[in-house]
Image (tube, rainbow, N blue to C red):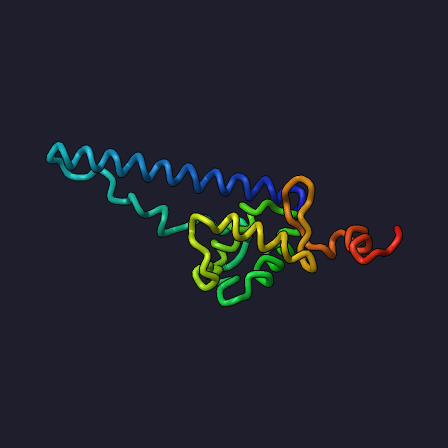
Length: 152
């Protein structure tokens, strides 16, 4: 049951993050307008939601992936989720777990693309499914066997 509900919980956490960001933006806009009118800001807690982040969707500690090689961090994330994930989910999970993309030289605007390429190229550890998600090759023994030239 836990594995079945995990994607729903993650989706709701992501939705909550987006909603909190929208609320903060609205508060900032109101404060900016009040300032232009010569009044005091109404919301002193504008950044409070950012200081108290929602637990990472991956369930990881904020430093879970810090200092680890990319393939190791991605593998651990997938093992933690116990299911194939999109590149976007993996990127978000690694970011929330403190993975240092700067050490790889990946620019922020290219991270998703670089991550997807890296996972796809490492076919000894990862497997890209037809639905554009990534799983661990060990989860798909028939695929691994076919790659090694074995007959099913």
